[in-house]
Image 1 (cartoon, rainbow, N blue to C red):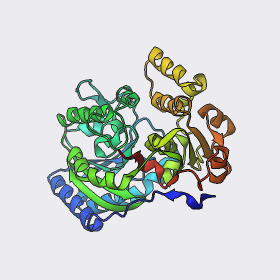
Image 2: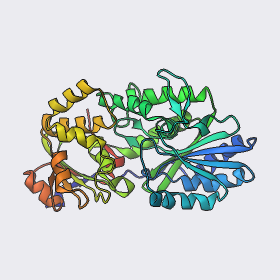
Image 3: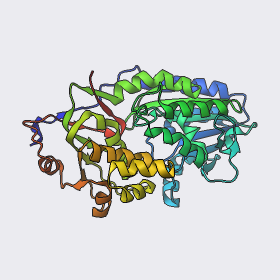
Image 4: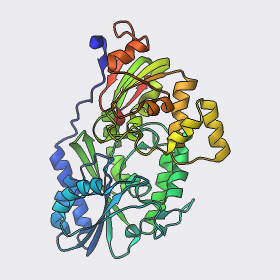
Length: 392
């Protein structure tokens, strides 16, 4: 049945010699770190596939003899001891003397950094005795526009109320994949970064990856390193189709397929490329089930979009509400049917989400009345990192 499905594969990534670009970015950062006696390195947490190890390996000679601290930028994410060990061990082999801390957005010792609105950050990032370098990766993000080190050292290392206030902007129609200008979430992150940079100079190395493969890199301040890679990130992560699809098959792979909390990005990235009344088939193993499930309470209480939007307006935005409201808009207001090919999601999970289970892609399409021989169907590999939009 799927012989007529069109595959929106990643575009060839040829931005020059990737190893040379990475070496150049690391060398530029190392030169800036040379005078420092102590260095704090902020890295993304295990829910991101950032190749922090590749950058640290190249920075290691410049960090020799310095007091080094590794700060894992978790945002509001939580990890158990086993997950922490598995993540930290490869980094500890590169920098065996480094002290490692996992950011806690509820910690009592977070430090105010001002700004409008004011926010608080992990104390290691405003320690005058240590230089700061952030390692990140630039990918399309469904409401922040693009990820990168600007997000690592703000949302990744901030206090929960500030993260929540920033993410409330995800309810805006202007918070779209790959969009930075006018995006309230990105502009809020940029304002947080400006406040942080009044206290501490932050160096950055951003990577551009296709899966685990590094294809480009840039160094500078966080926003400089973002600007340098943004056009390339859009070239890799954005696909355009001539008209809305009858169905999209969305493959959530790697770390972003381990829970629905992350795999949902595959839907959000491309939901506007599906026609009203169309179909999405999410293919995601989700061995960790829903994962962080705070948004599920709103979905359980609100079976319609109107009910969800009214609840948020009445009680105020709570972290994760945007996931629930936008899902209800997709399935209730726009009438898009979502089928999940996933062993990790329970029948109860799917009922709350408003999804149907499918044994495979073919069954999901058939249940939606979609025939690839007649209808327009696209398959999106690595859909949690790719945004599909309609031309025009």
